[in-house]
Image 1: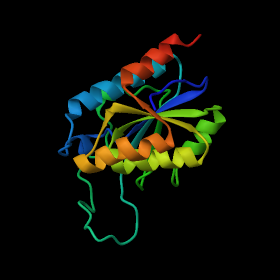
Image 2 (image 1 turned 45 degrees about the horizontal axis):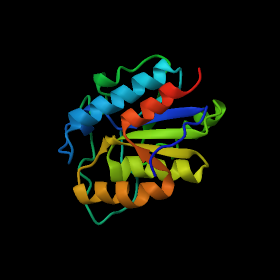
Image 3 (image 1 turned 180 degrees about the vertical axis):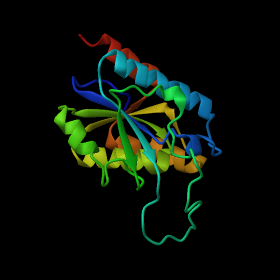
Image 4 (image 1 turned 30 degrees about the horizontal axis):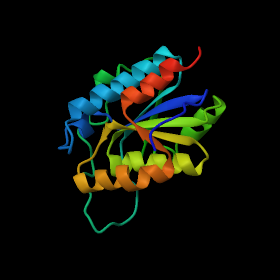
Amino acid sequence: MTVTIIDPKIALIVIDLQKGIVSLPTVHPIGDVVKHASALAEAFRRHRLPVVLVNVDAGPPGRTEQPRRMTEFPAGWTDLIPELNRQPQDHLVTKRTWGAFTDTDLETYLKSLGVTQVVIAGVATSIGVESTARHAYELGFNVGLAVDALTDLNLDAHHNSVAHIFPKLGETGTSQEIIDLLDKRSP
């Protein structure tokens, strides 16, 4: 369902737009994803709404059938990209699992502000974004996903998340549709 309502207390969560991740081969041009996520961040800041910037510096523990790509990250890999224009009031979350809520202060931070809805953007659609969206939904947040501010390393995985998973967790829309709804709100 297209994003229809913006709650009075809404926050933006930008997942893993960091130097190491944006250098990976994605299925949609990363420049477009960055442009849309940055526009969302600026709009949320303009409306004095929380912006949460998330980076990852480890992988979840446990065995998997697929080997991990990296066990150690090169210098600068976790640095947020400058296009996000991080501001002092932005909240930084460094995660060590796929989802931004697991073993971080994100839930406490959002609830302390009275946030009832989150909009999520970033990379990778089927991993960090989907894990964060699922957890947000389970915690009782209304979830919105900015589909033009998302991409993945795998087209099938991206499509599955956008077409089949996200409609069960919340509403989807373009970054411009979300910005337009923010701009229509009363101050």
